[in-house]
Image (cartoon, rainbow, N blue to C red; front, side, top):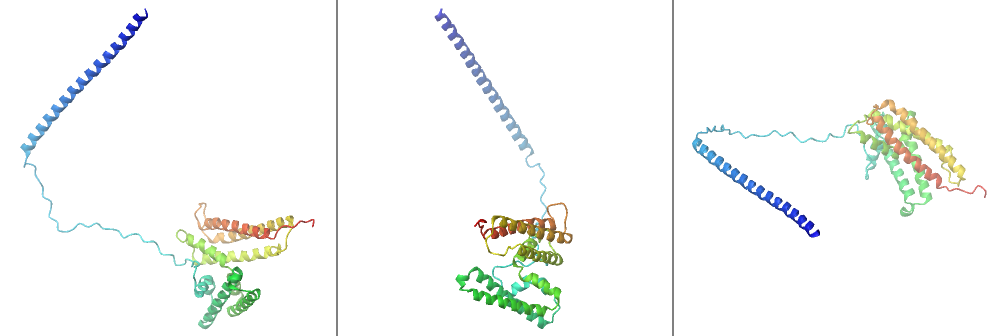
Length: 315
């Protein structure tokens, strides 16, 4: 019985294989026939095309190209050039500046409005150069006292020379308004550097004219002066150690003074700058730039206060 079933199974398998083989043989024959027919048709088409070409040979009119002795040239537009720096662009601080360059950059708004004789103007510039030279020496002496072999007495002498030169400049300037501007400008290196970065960043999009630059810079410096007076009252410049509560109190007062400084400055200059709801306008860019500056300022002030240390209130 089992043998009979196995025989039936094998018979079925061989029958299926036979059908499959027969199908592939038929497909092969059918494909060969189609290829032969396609080959014959292509041969006929080529023969017919050759005959027609021979019949029409020489009958196709050929239109000669017109004689043209003038070379065809393509008009090439000149390469775009970068727009030159606009006339009122501020002068950025350079690594190696002469004293003359420093004076012209730092006091440009002051010198532009003075009404002095040629002799007085020459004398003023000489005094300003002398003043900036002493200022640079003091900076180097404070930063590298050991390397430059400056004693505390040497630095005190330089500070005295600076004060004497400032007095001579103020006497030569004369009027109180110009003297106030000089007072704001003489220690404004950091603020002017930050302002020039902002103004130069705008130069390709929304350039500030000279009046706007002067307004923004002097507003910043006036509010800086009020800020310095405010933090002096908090005891910020003292060097004695603090209790933790005193430390946190001074930090809070200094942060508030910095916030007031920033907000008062921005509110004052806003009417003088282009402003709209887009993120790209003179005022919006100044506001964003100033926010970053003041975050760094507050962090620096906090670290300065914390360096004084915290004492145990119970000792």
